[in-house]
Length: 114
Length: 112
View 1: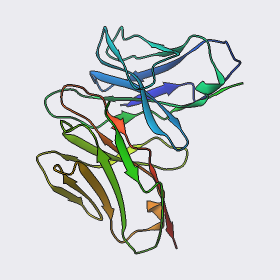
View 2 (view 1 turned 30 degrees about the horizontal axis):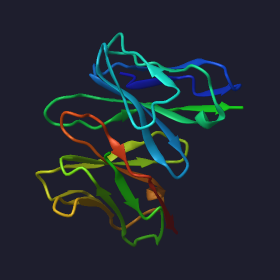
View 3 (view 1 turned 60 degrees about the vertical axis):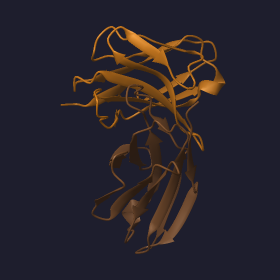
């Protein structure tokens, strides 16, 4: 049971390049989400999904796209990287239902855009 | 929109003393409040959580209290140890939305 797996761990991009951050979970969680973490600003929600084929925007969605074709995978795409997207990105998942279950986080991806 | 305010941003305590971190939420429909601990370079990990039908929950040296009327909840750590040094995040969410809104974090330093 690997939990939530994120790849890559580190990435450096030039302004304007595109890339996909991968996230996979093996816990059969319906809910998956992406956060970015910047100093002094906590964890800000980018996009989230409550099941395959369903996605929605969070607090800071601009510049990012997501899709959810399977329960296990929730990739985050940067279409044209900007220096403001330099951050640490966390993927997190949980069960859905009447009672909340806690978020399980991946180990993060540290992205630098130059 | 929903908002969670967290105070203080930094907190230094002597080993063995208690530490208290407070969060205030804006959405009165919020009903689940987890606390996460993040060590340097690591991922956030759940340490304790509380639901809106409970006023207090304890787990060894850690406790969380919830005041629904005032819309705030607090993390209490007693008998602090150096390994408690980390960044702590509170969060709030509401049934049916699945959007976890996090506070901005508190960096706790336990001085030996």
